[in-house]
Length: 346
Length: 199
Image: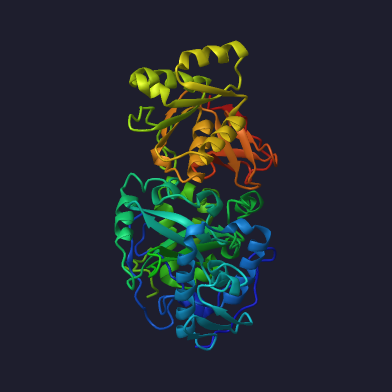
């Protein structure tokens, strides 16, 4: 499949938009008309052709522009990419997983030739043609995680496993929904999730950790998470919150359709073969309310979900200021008809 | 004290009878916990114990009286938290196996000791800790990454960039600091009053 990459921005003039095909494949996260935290983990198996689950690593029409935005973020704040020294083996594991997946599933765009440790990687959309020695950092322009992370959509963190815990000891995080890698690096699973409301008491993290510690190589898993973003800004980091927070005050009944975005994270996890670490990808998809409402089921369901969302969760996700305006705008798409179970369009 | 999951628990000092050497870092309030520790341990424990005292806010006489009460442990008095941690790092640099680390006092002091220990491969959970005295916090500004020390109010003005920071109840052991996030990013015209919260 040859992708047509869009030339668009995620800052300043915000020219990002989805093609009709991209809207159709959007991973709408609400399987019913309400939402509550759950350990909604399922096997990361290959899905239907054209869906975001078709391949383990999903590359789409926003690829080139997203990589350009990531480079801007890293230039301004190198702390968005950090790895503790003991994570170097896991970094190579990650590079291998991503390169082999991308080259296998998108041969028109990427190719990988391997002769022992001598690797030849070609990334056509980004104009990269590079021969390097697998395992030798000196043959790459960056450390392995940053090298491949600058060429793959989605944020990545790598979790070391020891003492019956997962430790976030490396990551390249430029499109985060309001959490700081620089603050959280080195924390364990409970610590970095500490600010999440309600879920600790519900035992969600105990169960999720138990599950993840037992993950096996070759059996990746995934879940969806979501929030909302004003303007198509990928870099909604706390580092820059003092610059973008004000956007939340700019929503009016007239501009909801273009300004308010549902932001969905396809989170996938892989056990890595050499390091026994766990790779966590946070692949971000955004959709404007105007785009979302073109799918009747989603236009009906989203206002119902937002209306019944517990206030703590709305606060944590930062929706409070524009939640009602968005519900009001969406309500004209909700004719009260019942919706079918599952997230996909009818 | 809040019990957020990222914040360590300080269970209180207890003597490790098997340690060949005990190194304790404390401030004036924490010194009381060290006096109690020594009283609980056997007679030989104090002989294997050296204390680094951060004497910030103490007059000479008060320091002397604390040193007296901690005897027969060896006590080194330093002018404040920063020199106390510098001294600890010197001790750890030449330390041998069998050393047990303790920290007693304010949370920034405990955090700095645990941090210095971690830099020398001492498991944070193995450091015996007791919180005493002020609830003041060290806060890292998530925006400029500057540290603000001895924070008692919420919000607090960042000592480096001047933004008004909400002190979030989220703690990093690596940084030994709480997270500060701009409180009025969505309401720049408002300037919430600084309330004393961590005394």
